[in-house]
Amino acid sequence: MNGKILTQALLQTSGNELRMVYALLLKTNILGMMTAKTKDFFSKETDHFNETLKTEMTKMERFSDEELQVKLFTEITRLLDLPAKPYNTPVEIEMQGDAIMEAVHRAMLNDDKDYERLVESPNNREIYQLIIQYQMQKVFSAFDTKFRELDEKKTTDFTKKIQGFLMELPDEKQQELKSKLEVDDLSTEAIRMAILTQGSVVVLSIIVEVAGFEAYTTLTSAIAAAMALIGVTLPFGFYTFATSLFSILVNPLILLPLALGGGGLLLKHQNKSMKKKLLPVGILQITLPLVAQAKIGEADFAPFITHWEKQEARHRELTIKRAEYEAALLDKEAEIKFYEEQRESHVQMMESEKEKVKTYKVFIGSHIATLPVEERTSALQEGIDFQASIKEEIAAIEQQKGENRERKGLWRTISATIDNTKLNVRKNQLQKESEERQKELVEELLKSEGAFLQAERESLLVHQANAKEQREKALVYDEKAATAKEKAKELKNRLKIMNEQIKQLQNEYYGLGHNE
Image (cartoon, rainbow, N blue to C red):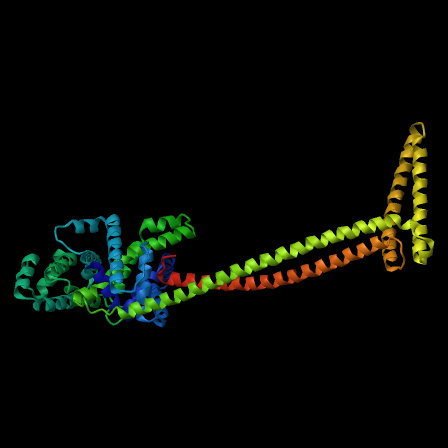
């Protein structure tokens, strides 16, 4: 029954009332409230929180009623940390409504001893009745002080509205009221005096007890009129919310941790805590009109379900597309791996062929001095003569080093050591020059014609061609891998966008992707 009441009431809440509840429950935060109160201190001509709320409500005008109903319902389940569920049938929606009411009820029992005492009182009532009754008693209590501050005309106007409602009650109800209020009649003055002596909390609660929940319609209207709320943009519900917001704002358990330097996580926690404490007030605003006007059973679930299924279809479409991108990315990554493996294979074969070329060049270079004279070009002859001169100079250096080592005496030994160091530097320089010239001679020989080391020269050229071929093949696979990587990068970007869209949709509608 509780879930049925909540969901049917939500589906019949629309317009400014719906937007006000949505903005107050989901857009209100502690820093915003504190900022508004600070501005009020310096400028009392404007209710800054009221203005901020109006701005948020204006932003909500771009959403349809059913869209806000679904968003509000799913956000409440998220706020209460309830398991996410789909909402494709009225039964599913009402079952989640039951879970919401149970969660709010348990939280109130844990946090509020006054509510616990109300629950333990002998009258058997449903959860929705307990929440409405308790919240309205808080409204009556907040109004009690205000009532005593009103002038006689306003208090009389207020009691006239109440008295008019009471006169429409059956005689037996009127008699019961007289007895419980301890008055001789239900005149305007008698009711006014009862409120002044007994308090509005007692009198108004007795009226509801006797007349039933439909009395709340008259009472809230009368309170709104007395508080000059009739005719303003915000409905009476703002009064009940504002009362609760103020009590939360001055709560030391909320403000003290923040004042001591609470960070972002603490602020987020406190905002969530505040919203949870406002939930009973939101439930009052949603359910009271339905209960008071006995409109249970008149709700149309179709727009709610249609909007939910539209979001569900969009979510399903996005997840299917994401799966396609993920599969395509896996295929592309496998393709990249294949290309890189092929490239590496050809690089290894290329390096192997290069090593063979190098070996043949070293062999040919070591034998080039034996090149027949008739096959020597002028460049080859010059190179061979240069190599011979270097060989002679290195031999002379080795002879000189040997003679230096034969020197005796301290100073001669030191001098010989210094001289040999210089000789070693020169020797290393000559060897380097010899190696460079030998490479040049091999290249020159490969360009010449002749029979000298013909088989080795041909083998070298074959391995050289093989190395070039393997390099070209490696480059082909390198290009293929680069192209595939670009496509993989594009797929990753698309996948990132898709994940962001899915996450955004799941954040907007808690319950989408509940099986993931």
